[in-house]
Amino acid sequence: MSTDQFPAAEAAPVLSVRFMVEADASPGLLPRLLQPFAKRDVIPDRMWSHRAGAGMHAEIAVYALAADLARMIEGNLIQVVGVYSVTPVLGQAALLAA
Image (cartoon, rainbow, N blue to C red):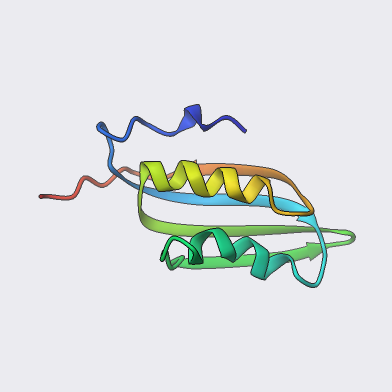
C-alpha cells in the first residue's frame, strides 16, 4: 500500500483513520499489531478483529492522528510478521486550532 493516500501534513495535520489489516491468524498477532501505536504513545479509539479460517481481519481506528504518524504506523503494520495487507481508510480530516 502506498502512503500517497495520506494528505500532506500541512494540509491536514490531524486525521481520522482506520487501518484495515489482513493477516495470517496467530496467537501473538494482536499484540504485534498494537505495538506501533504503543511505541508512539497513541491509544487506538477502537479495535475489532475476527478470524476466518487460517486468516484474520483486524480494524484499528484512531479518530485524531497526525498525518505523519499515520504514515509511519501504516509502514510499521505492513512489516508485522504474518500481515499481508494494510489498507488505511481515511475519515474526515479534523484541523485543530492552535
